[in-house]
Image (cartoon, rainbow, N blue to C red; front, side, top):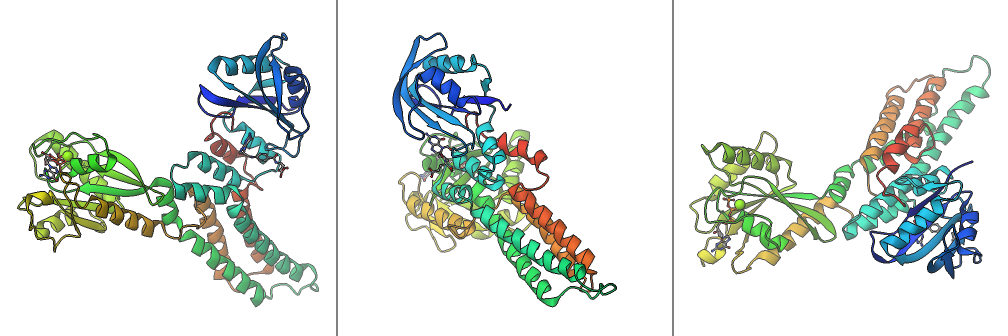
Length: 445
Ligand SMILES: Nc1nc2c(c(=O)[nH]1)N(C=O)[C@@H](CNc1ccc(C(=O)N[C@@H](CCC(=O)O)C(=O)O)cc1)CN2
Ligand SMILES: Nc1nc2c(ncn2[C@@H]2O[C@H](COP(=O)(O)OP(=O)(O)OP(=O)(O)O)[C@@H](O)[C@H]2O)c(=O)[nH]1
Ligand SMILES: [Mg+2]
């Protein structure tokens, strides 16, 4: 028989209340043993909780969810205990001393929900992202997926592939002997083409999905002493970076994540760019250039009292790497030093000393991140999804490329495409994927 698992499902202790869940065939027996009698299914009731020897352990709320109508699909009991470390430790010890019970592994409750068909893989991934979500947009996207948004989309595509295949197979199953080889019906071809276009449209959102997930990367760059580290500290509202009047202070790349317009915006403070004989600073400059190359946006700072001209500034940006010059926001820093500083060549003027221009800068960053992340309520696209969709798409391209495909071959190609798609929701060949997905959870989820 399947093990019954137990774990603390709520957060770090001590806490006001700790929720411990017990799921599996022994859940009912265990709950009766520890709580005396069980409340009505799905109703909370206050109970004295006793340990395996009958000594009082705590007084807490108990719930029982008979399978399959539970979060895991198995019988599931919840104990809402006082959230002290010793209370929870004693409870878990008492529970695991009973036969058939063991501690849950990371993600095991969710894994059981998947195995029992309560959720599919994309919903499990959505739950994982929901727990990890730190900004509003991340939360909304994760919830959309946890609630079956991606599952419905992929299932719809799968159904349509199945339908197309069935039509093709019917053409050779029921045709007269020797009648095969007429090629695939134009109507079926057209339907598959529409499907392929929908997958392409979804794939084109991959870069946006990555920004939602990995954050919008902003490299703060410029000549030494431009006030880059001062700006990072001001935006982070803490002393993250060392600031001194000495040019060449920063060497390592320092990172701070802001939540702007519900999106994670990652600011990287970098070493001032210049030719240098100092080997340590040279490494810093190299890292600065690499950071600029990978950035979604370069925030180029020039101090108002510096001799740096716009042309020189742009030269630095261009020289930053072999690839495309990165989108750049040119900022005149230390604006307090030159009241009538020429702003024309710059997008913005700021002064960390007076705070002038910082709100405008934040608004500009938020607008850039928002534009890059695209439609607010689009379904998220994860790397695993992208890979499977690219493979599905490749099969559909094979299908489209040969208009005179034998129906048997055409049907086989569609079967393969559907198979790739099926991996997304977890209906085919997924054992190897399970560990990857569920191990990302914490214990008790
Ligand atoms: N106390 C507590 N809160 C929690 C959870 C939990 O496990 N325990 N959850 C943990 O993730 C989330 C809620 N997830 C749940 C998912 C399904 C069912 C459930 O009983 N489903 C049944 C009945 C549905 C109904 O009554 O409408 C079913 O689907 O058949 C319960 C919780 C968030 N809050
Ligand atoms: N007047 C004025 N001084 C500033 C302003 N911002 C920074 N400074 C000063 O400029 C000097 C250099 O500041 P940093 O933030 O270390 O400059 P940086 O660009 O990080 O310099 P490196 O790390 O050496 O490349 C420090 O003395 C700061 O106090 C500002 O807005 N106005
Ligand atoms: Mg610095």
